[in-house]
Length: 246
Length: 357
Image 1 (cartoon, rainbow over the protein chains, first blue to last red):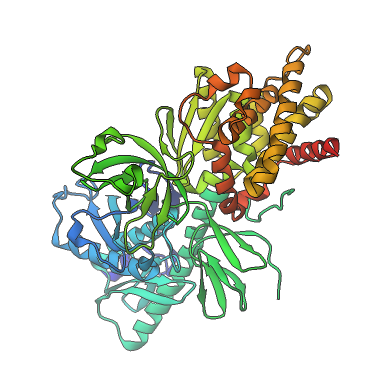
Image 2: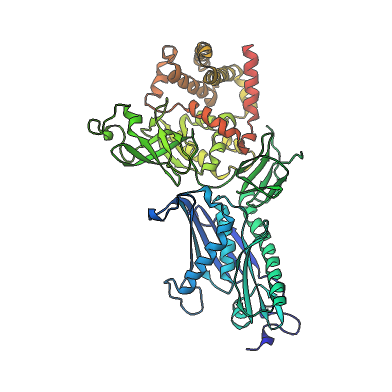
């Protein structure tokens, strides 16, 4: 497959987007009744469900930390989430993504508020289409807020990458495999700090800067969608609080 | 100093700029105060706080909680208080100082699976919370309907000055015991009233952030419209309120008010018994005076003046709900829901006061 199929002469990408367009994102909050917090995200063709339990008792007990809460993350792809069946046992890739999701969420949480407890985050990929770690982080952050855990900020995430000479926003599965670089970024939009930065491929310094800036812009767009989803769950459509008779 | 309106926030939202004191679920970030929870931000005289709309229960000293005995060691019980920490109830608290594990049988007092209402005496996050059942009205809950609600909904269920829970109790002839940890136990003799109360509590939980909730709960419980009620049973409702007022004041002032409540309660008895023969006695106001009397009966043993029937109603060792209300009232002042006042209740109180004068 050559690069022409990834971006055509009109600047359109393989799925019809422009170079600065995100895939359509839809977030639903509170989809799992038994969990303390939960979210379902459709990020293009990605479909991911996230459940948060806790803060709760740590089992096994020796894992508990005396001064802060333990955060445990499990990223898992369902056997039916990909074209060919995926073995449900945790692969090397899943273990690694679990770790990077945990590390990208940790700075946003005030874990010292819940010493000797644990927060469990389960990220289950029902359908994968490239950028599932970003989508997982977005949904996990919303689910953590839904669970009522003290947070400094929401975490939004977005990838950017290079297709030939073009730096494009939000890489999908095909572009990930055939493109030249893929850079997922997780970002705290209010505090303006980066909590995850990975890079697969080659970028020059100027391309790197452009790619990072583009990913951060993408994160800010995603943040608005996260915010809207949370607001909708808790406050319906009214965004201003009406003063009531006392 | 700029004034801010109450508004909805999510984690990370900037609430206000400037040198304000962060009170609850708020942290400083640069010049701004930011929210750490989903909720309603409020800036008062003392500082800025966010009333959370979700989250698990984190124990606080002096909270009244309902817990379940899950384990027993030789010196204490372990209590599940619906939190990430298990609480301990020392055996000395139940048996007294001279408790001896060899002599006293702990199983005689509390068994695994028992439900208790207790107060948190100490908790600082580095150790598990300690409970006590020493206070009046604390201890084992013998029976009742068990409901678990979100701890963030508890202040809304209680309502401003206990208005919501009073409405439910009076309309369904039940007693509702609320723990700050989100566990509610409803007791009552009437099965229908019990299920109606459970329904109302679940409704409050689900729709706690919506406006006009009190009205909808009242219509669910078939409580008469305030204006109608006032016209038909003015005298009755006002005496009921008087006893209510006096009761709350005794809780604060104690001995002086005690004698006056006893008098007022006597008045209330006579008026309620006389009004029971009136053509259309609304169920709610009648029962309201009953419940008020019941609580007094427990607190101040003015039992001689009470009708027999009312004594029987409270013959199990349960918790004085008025006491719980007093406790939660303080924490409830912190709550956004407290602003959803019951205008009707206030109006009635005013009238009652006038009558007394």
